[in-house]
Length: 116
Length: 156
Image (cartoon, rainbow over all chains, first blue to last red; front, side):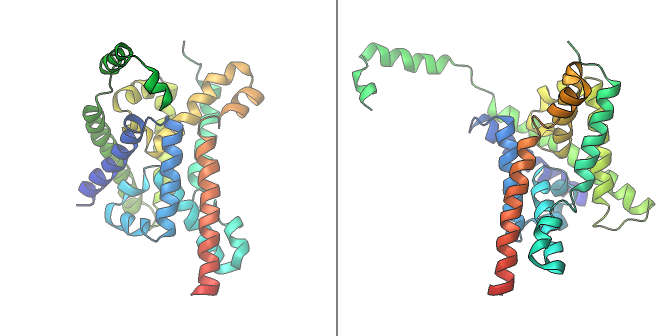
């Protein structure tokens, strides 16, 4: 069942992104930025975590979860160490995504040649 | 407003005509494609997550990290082989919105600017497209977490 909801919720988030590009005429950069900030706000309101419980990867794979994870890491650390934790914890959860993207992209630039 | 009033009738007719002839994106079709492909990417993510959950020592919370890493690796490889571009042309936001799109924007910039050198080209341009996402994501997350922390310390 989780696969079905992952498909539906993930699909809906992507459709929202498509609508932002087609209807609101945002550039892909603006669309992604809007989605990330929305994810952060939703987590601030405590709404994103229930969505993850409900839809699994449907909520964690779209870029909105990046904003969610940033807030989440910051909050988790802030609960333990007070206000300074907001700064130290902000990349705690997203570390895997960001470092993987940097490392693999760099290695790809060594291996692959630009096309055209 | 004033500008519109100065237009003659013919100008107005022409502008309506031009607006009609302007190619419109097939929004419904695009949304359908984004929904299906985006949904499939997320379902695939769920599959990887369950794979890590059941075969390795991960729990619900930590299984997300290797899942994202694997999706990013796949996305970078597809970008390198030139497949991702074609996919993105077809699916639009369906492959741009998932984390794979984030990885694609970084790796495609890294590969493209390779000719300008490894430090200034690859290093300097890798975040050209992904940068805004990180900057706005981090800043907004900081403000939200700050407000929430202060709220919980003093208000709650």
